[in-house]
Length: 453
Ligand code: SAM
Ligand code: SF4
Image 1 (cartoon, protein in one colour):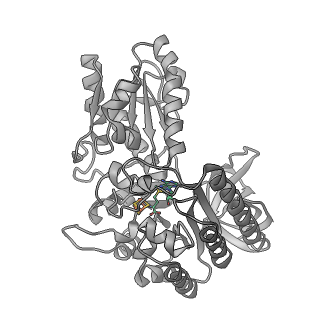
Image 2 (image 1 turned 180 degrees about the horizontal axis):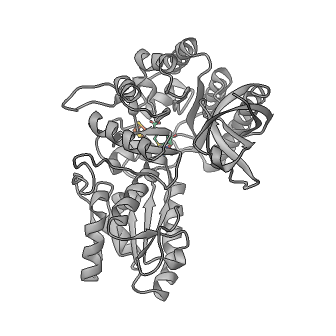
Image 3 (image 1 turned 90 degrees about the horizontal axis):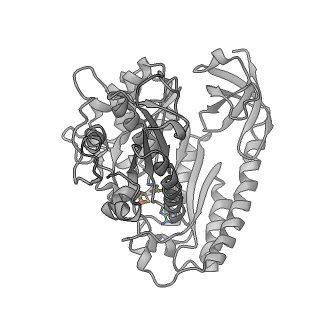
């Protein structure tokens, strides 16, 4: 959440974002589009005239969180009848009008391709006093950006790093995943638009951009002017002055040698790759429809580490996928031991509506899946701790993002390898890249001392 831009009679907007970085980006878009209509963002929901919930339904747990938050708003709406409650994001797209039926205090449901219309739709609801659901097949162009010299700037005020969506949707249809159903087919944004946005962010003081897409490696498909993802990266480096570029997420099947070489050749590209493997068993990967084998994945990691030995690696794993045997799970554990990721995001499988895996009969019992998850997370905790410990004594370049969350007077930032580092430094160092000598390692972060350049 951001700060209040001004006070007084302007209408107050409270935004709550559930789920992933793509949703964070959409929330920034909503914030910008409604700011143009005079709304200011508040951190205190009690002061809001409009509540916008940007929802996620990638996993069952995320969806349940949305329902319980929506339910908790009933009383609030009773005490403030003029309050408008809007639900956007994947749950909105998935359920549409059914969400209005289920929560009679909800005013608007906005599909994933209606974000650009949020201002007009809110105006319509305010004027009519009615409730509405808008789920278009295609997104209308954004009326507040794309004009000559007017780039979209979706950024939290004063942020050092900013997300930039380079593509929407996904065509991969992994058998467990709801994304293609709620985000639609893959669409890439033209390179010129992306470059314009990066330059605009740079002009606002942003030092690092995070390029977002469900499968950035296949960026460029279907664009009039053909371009690949590695070419886009090179253009951003050549045609903007942005200090650092990151991206997520990459699909292992589409990771090319050209992209791997960028890690060695491009100064501004951060040396970190998030490459979700999902499982360590070929049988499970095939049923997931991932389009690669364990050996193929490991070979790509080997090549990448040959090209860029210091690359930081993270991944996603699902445990308890339908039909996953103890043997399959053992193979996932062996894969973690072999690859030794720096960081891992791991989840218990959950059924998602319409997906093929939801119809698979051989479900793993929930308690057993939870047990496997704990075992896997314990192994990864050891690996991550060992990797962090190996950093002690090294000097790393850190982009200072701002005061650390612990608010103990320390600043926080990230190394090029995506490791979080906390250190004592003045507030004025925000936005700078400083040298930090690593003194201590913790499970998820490092601590160090600034060194003179
Ligand atoms: N596009 C990315 C990819 O291909 O890996 C990530 C998409 S998804 C938003 C993020 C992660 O959620 C996935 O990598 C997967 O590990 C997890 N996930 C997706 N569907 C899931 C499900 N039904 N149950 C459990 N985890 C799931
Ligand atoms: Fe979902 Fe697979 Fe697309 Fe990732 S690549 S968003 S996991 S369908």
